[in-house]
Amino acid sequence: MPVIARFCGIVIKMYLRQKEHNPPHIHAIAGEYVGMFSLKDAEMFEGDLPLRYQVYVRQFIAEYRDELYRMWENQEFRKLPFME
Image 1 (cartoon, rainbow, N blue to C red):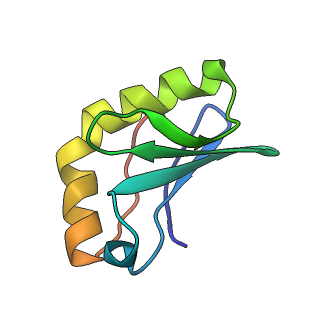
Image 2 (cartoon, rainbow, N blue to C red):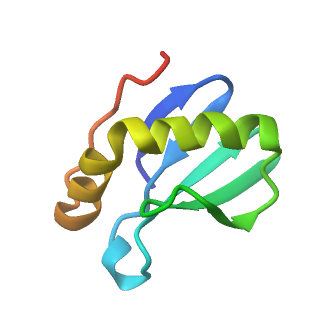
């Protein structure tokens, strides 16, 4: 699972072959906590990521939503510079 960003103690990843398990989403990991966030509305739909991290992940999705959708569709991953 490629790492596409790191910021504020959070690692953002997107699985290869994402199209096989919709809806489009990212995985956010902060230590022992994990959350899966929808690209559409930036809501966490699975996981236990604390609210203080969720705020940063939602900002990240808002900033890079179009690029994240492109990565989801074409499976060409790159690191994004948010808050590095």
